[in-house]
Length: 546
Image 1 (tube, rainbow, N blue to C red):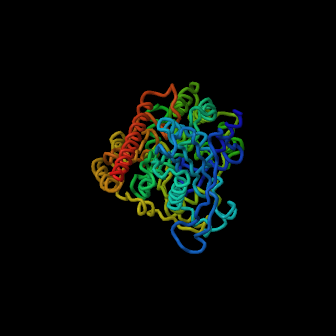
Image 2: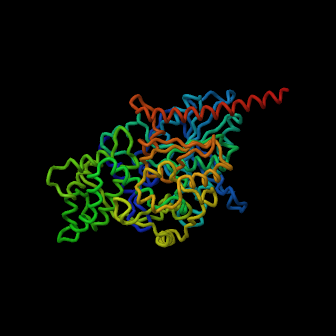
Image 3: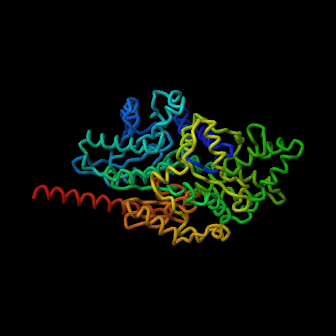
């Protein structure tokens, strides 16, 4: 079992690799669902019951084909629910780019919320993912842009709204408040997470997209959900709101704070790899040093693979594993006299150990759900220059991105649509975190934290309420997160010690105090939302009686 899970971890990373000028090197959210479904199908406890809803294909048009339907999977757990008559809450996981069964198995904090507030758990799978594929099969759904054209975030949000409304009616639960949760895969009580920790590697958490959806759901459908918890939601990483290099600046900061010598070794390793690769039999030697499962075809393959390992480690630099420290301890702890490449290889083995490393030149696929989304509306211009991080230059080029998308799908990305649809174009994300970034980064950005706060306050403060934006500042995606309160009810909770989505993991007795405190703040705020809702419900009932 341990060997199978170790293989899964390697496959997850391989699937995320895409050596192309189109994509930045990030631990992006996506690419996990088919692996989990096909080879590692999750068996849920009996209290998790799977259903299918006859979902509308097109919510926004009235053409004959718009009335087609597809089977959308959702999962319910009523073990904690107080019932419709008690107006007990419904906690909805807004499905992301994954198989929803995996989410239900490994999400933990949402279950804790249900147990505390006598809530019903509802997990809704995102259209075109998992078993919620329109047109009967993935082959048909991905056959052309006409069938893929219904694959948008706005259609997905409308799916959630329709399903929730229908479900509440069927359960006679119209008075039950709904709270949207952007959740993670990791649950510390799950065997998978334990194995990963022992392997010194954390499962890449793809909760960012669902957290983004949770916040957008509250903004777009405030009559459906009374509040949303959005953990590690990079809602500001669109257009030119956030500096493109911010993600990798934070990765670099995480490593440099952990060890200056480790940071320097990684920074200097790229040119050393190129130097060895240019020698006779250089690629063969690199393949041997880094124990690749297949011979390397280029130094770029190896560099991309290493870079992705580093960003995955930073994005998931959570207790108790702390993968950044594991990598740096191995790099710094190599025997005296070990050269730069040898030290980097030691760090890689600490990240994900032997017997060998799957390093491939993966190309973007027109069968990838997430790549379709990045080729249409989810355009995050993440990239970096030559001297602003510990990585070699990897700039984001919209022209190359567009060309790749046109070659794959015949579509042209709309990089400005998200900010048009959901707002926020003039928002810049680095508030409190800005001052802790390198001076060189601050000098590149003339806007001050106070200016940026006024921008976001004017945008979200006018129409948003009851949203918790939580972030760990060691998470590179926190660069695109909301890091300061917008109003009394749109609040930012963060920790400088945590990384990606840690607050959504299952609470345990060994959790550090700062994590316990953060989760308790979230519980308290959600409790206030529910208390306010119930007070209004009682007042309304008394008004009718009077």
